[in-house]
Length: 153
Image (cartoon, rainbow, N blue to C red; front, side, top):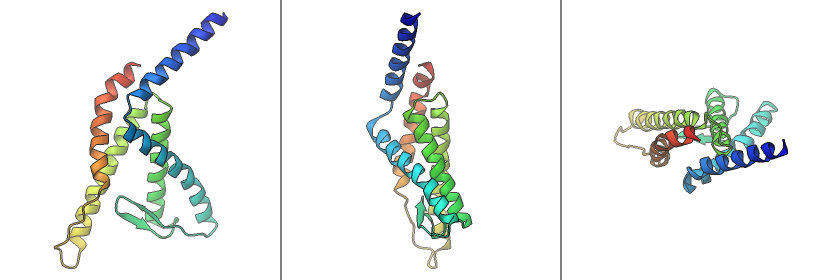
């Protein structure tokens, strides 16, 4: 019976190593960044309720108050990104799906930010390009390309 337990653990460890190896290093770096940011967001929300203010900024949107509508939206985005990072790092079955949703939401918000700023500009000649989109599009493509291998493991 102990042999079966060791075989199960061994096969689980091999599956874990294989799934994590599908993720390129640049995505792993962002996974760790957003794991930390997601964890910090919980503290920021609690401190925001206690009356402290923090400056939040993501995808071209910013808020000086955590409990403002924009602050709540940004906090939810950071929490979701933390959840996606957790799912990818710990190789959950649904990780690729929530990662694809994360990438699509990020691209939509970046495009809205770029279009919105240029349309609301006083001179309407400026265009703001969000650098986040340079990472979001390859992130979407990479997750789409590894989805089959991820689910097969």
